[in-house]
Amino acid sequence: MTRSTMSPLAIEGGPKAFDRPFPSRHLIGEAEKRAAMAVFDRAIETGEPIGYNGEEEEEYCSRFADFMGGGYCDAVNSGSSAVYVALRALEIPAFSEVVVSPITDAGGIMPVALTNCIPVVADTNLHSYNTGPEQIEARITERTRAIIVAHITGIPVDMDPIMEIARSHDIRVLEDCSQAHGSRYKGRLVGTIGDVTAFSTMDGKHHCTGPQGGVVFTKDPEMAMRCRRLSDRGKPFGIKGIETNDIGISQNVPVSNVVASLNLNSNNLAAAIGLEQLGKLPRIIEDRRRIARAIAEGIEDRCPSIRFVGDPAECESAYWFLVFDLDTARVRVSKQQFAEAIAAEGLPVAASYVPPQSHWRWFRTRTVFGEQGLPWTAPQFAGDPDRPMPLPNFETMDERLFRMDYHENLADADVDDIISVFEKVGRAYGGEA
Ligand SMILES: Cc1ncc(COP(=O)(O)O)c(C=O)c1O
Image (cartoon, rainbow, N blue to C red; front, side, top):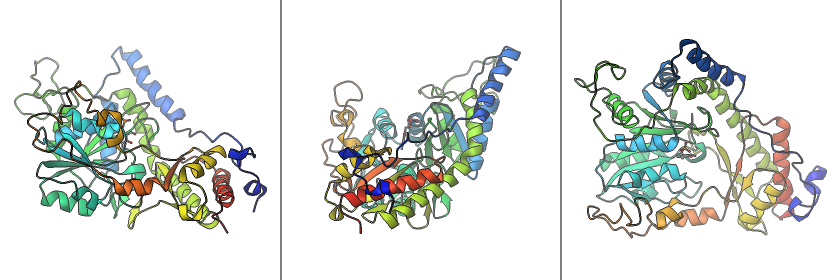
């Protein structure tokens, strides 16, 4: 037992057990800088603009598809855009219901309402922030046409039964892998199981394409072409007789855009950074898993009132942040107080991740297209716009789960000190031997 684990809690005025700034991640290095500069150098030399859909972007998409084990990628400008494009590429009718994960980023759900569909929030399971097959099935009606499954913090959702449920109801599945680059479910990469997949590659994710970015992935070539059209204002990619070559738009023949959409393209500069990052991704995943394992084992030994929320059976999670489950019966404070005490010791811990999307103001007030409550209030929507969406599992787990940001560049000494913080707080609040 070290002195730091015996001293008074920092939240009560004692010294911090993690007594230095939490280490920065250093995701961006010289390689990314050189790659970006090379794009500038070429633009300066040739006098041509940096552009999009060029060499770097094609290469990034092809390398990302290789990483996924084959298929098609379209790089876009954010994860939210990737979800929007992927959802539209599913071509479900407007005013369908789309079952969504409860605990996720707003960008993973808002596209549902923006495509004139009705988001229906499923409950979580009783282990993590993820939803599960039973919780999804409980929300399915004859109006359900799609499910968006988010693998929150890289922990794979139980996909096989979800795919079975979806297939039996003729429902499409969109995997949101924004937080799960390289996680595996029963040997398969998440993102290769559903019909289409969205990734965020914004600056904090496992790998990034600069400050913002996203990727749509699919194994279906037709879907891939729809994604390209939908991320580029409906340009006629892949439509014979309208396009003039198989990579894009002729420079000299006017084309007719075929579907209304937005310009959600990525670009060659972002892709050049992304290419360097893709090279680092396998190591990032491995190091994140190694560090998560070390923290989990240390906590299991020295802070038994806490369980690390780790890999489900036959899964390998590429963790984005770490989730802990506090056995509240073994400590004399709430999860909130416990998490605050850990944060006060110097760790990037928060008592929760995000509230369920159905609790957010935009969702409660149905503020999507002005004030009229559309799409919920549209006459074409045949369902109950006020259908209750109880989240009892989430409420149970919300008493217990808390999270900590971490990254792949933590040193062994950082890991030891993180474990000491948990031990100190666990001991002070009475749960430990
Ligand atoms: C699960 C999930 N979906 C969608 C998004 C939206 O991605 P972006 O911030 O790149 O728009 C995020 C971002 O954190 C996310 O975590």
